Amino acid sequence: METLSFSHHPAFRPHHYLPKLKAVLLKPSISPITMAVNVDVNWTVNNEWTLSAETAFDNVGIAAYRLDNTGEFYIFRINILTRYNDGEYTFTDASGDTYSLSINESGTHYVDYNSSNATITNVNYSP
Image (cartoon, rainbow, N blue to C red):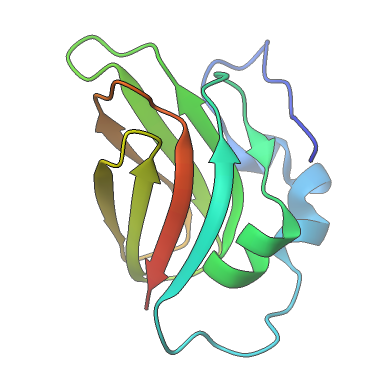
């Protein structure tokens, strides 16, 4: 797993880092996903963009993710960079709470949440 550093850019701007992500983003799908898929992960809060492991990328279409703990009302934020155009993501944290995110285009998306244990342990994708 490779961590990307964005110390000079507080907000992730995929077009600035496309050369590094290009191979990941343009990887062809083996087949379109037609049913819900679950992937176990271990995403910890680190306030940095991280390239997804092959399993997460191939199965749920997340090229990179970032977990922040800089919120005011909601303490945590899951940011994802997706390659799929639409669908529903559900994230489960280590405390067993779930958070949903609907998307209608590929790109960066986020969901804010509060948790007693913010590590994301499972991602579900439904087309």
